[in-house]
Amino acid sequence: MPLRGEVPQLLISAGLSLLDEEGTPGLTLRRIAARAGVSHAAPAHHFGGLPGLRDAIATHGFRSFRHELVTALEGVPADADPFQHLLTVNLAYIGFARRRAALFRLMFDQLPTEDSTLREIARATYVVLRDRCTPFVRDRPAAPLQTSVWSMTHGFAMLNMDQPYPPESPVQVSSYEDALRLLVG
Amino acid sequence: MPLRGEVPQLLISAGLSLLDEEGTPGLTLRRIAARAGVSHAAPAHHFGGLPGLRDAIATHGFRSFRHELVTALEGVPADADPFQHLLTVNLAYIGFARRRAALFRLMFDQLPTEDSTLREIARATYVVLRDRCTPFVRDRPAAPLQTSVWSMTHGFAMLNMDQPYPPESPVQVSSYEDALRLLVG
DNA sequence: ATATTGGCTTTACACTGTCAAGATGACCTT
DNA sequence: AAGGTCATCTTGACAGTGTAAAGCCAATAT
Figure 1 (spheres, chains in turn yellow, red, blue, brown):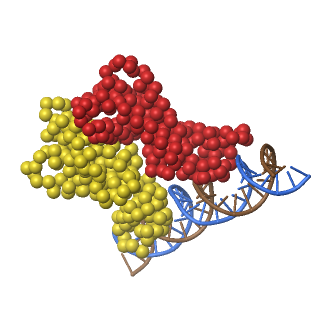
Figure 2 (cartoon, protein in one colour):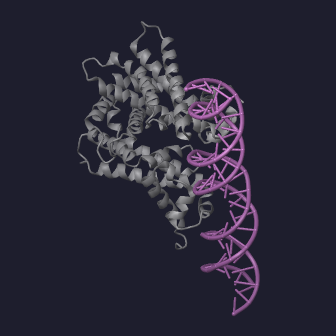
Figure 3 (cartoon, helix red, strand yellow):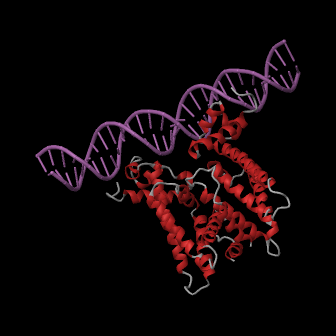
């Protein structure tokens, strides 16, 4: 029996590992509870039910996601080409989607939620990508450029998530780089 | 009891209406069977199981999807601006995703399948969009442009599928038009 | 006429999420 | 120190899920 107060975090961790190991269909309430070492009714007490638990897992997922984007950017010299920054955060976005496809799907499946914590971290994640578009805005309006970059990144991530080759192998960088360069002109 | 031989089509139609009326969670094997007026074991006989039935529904979805794209293009005068053609097929893509969100999700969820019929119609659908990029390729390589346009369209569709306003209302066309124009230069 | 096959139903099973009821134990009040 | 309260968690039951085995029935083939 786990220590008092650590059950919620335990459930979230169990869900994340289950998602990474067995994919979307492996994420059932009862299996999460079993892996966390609690009864199948414990999750309801902390998260209301499966939807609430999924929100919590998605929230944690976005935190990891955002952290990876920020970390990747920290590896780029501050005085580097702005395009290098934008490309880096884009590739980190796509890489996360490939490496943790089931979690990525869950995160965006849960987005139409009423959980304000989830909505906020999702927005904060977007901001990381959006801010790297600023150097390319120039005299144009910012919104279309930001929207199109986000759309292209997300679309590319979605369409390349389930490729047969292992998620560890990088995406065809040069191809995506060319596409991105078209966009930011 | 339905006529002989029409059960498969009946099951697919039942699944499509169920998906449109009640969304993803409404699509259960037993409810599909009930709506089609057959027992809950009938689907397995024709489609092997729920995954096979989902493949069949997704296949029908792609046929409708492709038909809508083609029909939308037929409404554009042949001598019109190539950008009008590209924009039209893009907006039809996004409109379908918004109007039939649950079906759209199912279609792309099923894409990593072994069902060659599904894979083929999915590819044929992509080709409709891809071919409208040709006038913008000019001296550049075609692949990055095609990939980026598809990615942006798909990403925009995904990110705008669950917006609160009703799916009948059009997306902010001007915003997307600006974004697309950036891409094709 | 008899056997075979395809199409479908019935039945059973393991598993799912949710709910109600109860057990346990820490904390607080008096 | 005794009693109460409340959050935490378990147990048990329930309706619903997908799948598999067995059987039924009509059409077809031999």
